[in-house]
Length: 382
Ligand code: MRU
Image 1 (spheres, rainbow, N blue to C red):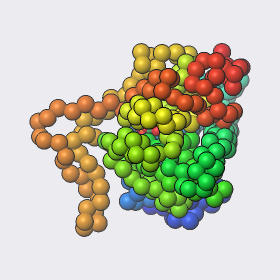
Image 2 (tube, rainbow, N blue to C red):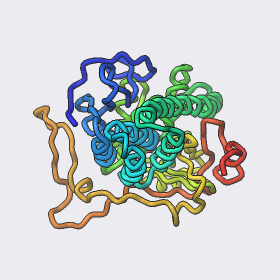
Image 3 (cartoon, protein in one colour):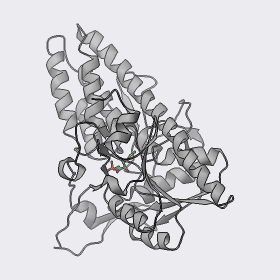
């Protein structure tokens, strides 16, 4: 794997970086055996592209959070299956396919999109009779899953925008204050985002909005990624320390919370970035609507009780001990923020029980966060 600085873009999409349009994952325009992604670890200080050539590159890219966010993790896994097959041979491609699927699924445990999209890839390859055919179908299928995710995000945006529009009418055109946590933006979802899609749609419709962006310790996806995305698009926003939301809500400064999800169970329990549950509690205490925006690829139809069943990733304590940022001299560096010798805990996600969720905004519409609501929108899922 090697890293190169950004020099081009010929992808026509909505989301802007320095006034150019990007997806977050694509096939190298000159070499179909290379997959390219945006290195999210370096934003907002440096915009660079990483080339993925082998399945190990894909595994490390997901595990080390070069790519992150549930829908993008899923699509990267799908391209990983394609790269794995490219490096197989005629006699072992079926074994490589099985092993690649298990290997990639083990890279991060909480976002269910990874397992769902990899299973879809494996199923679509069952009909293949040779390595060559398998590679062709794998590439086509990964591209299809990517485009499907974009379509779903846009649909989430259209449905979610109706909520913002309704609040805007009640406020007679005063800005609608929306609080979001982590980055469920276009970086996490290839295009549009999930939690941010309604925001971008409202912005396009010229509905006055303002976004409260939780910084989202310890990796600061809010401060580093969501704020950067919103700046690129020109959306008014303010970054707040994670523990500010409750105070803002008590003072009428939040009209609606919209967050993403890494895995939502059939009964509507929502796993999302650590800290989401606390925002849901504060929202409920202040009668502020708390919505979760998610594609069906983030719904685990095999799980019911989120708190008991969803695997919660625990990451290295170093992420808590050290903060990375740009120093006054312009160089990116790390500083220690925890006393040496103090133990740390680093749970990546928490589960918000369905009773605290006002509704789920999906690609098929908005439903209650319970089995009845989910089954009404997705009757074909068993
Ligand atoms: O650990 P991350 O950065 O991959 O976690 C991401 C989040 O929790 C997002 O809010 C979630 O994936 C929703 S992304 C649409």
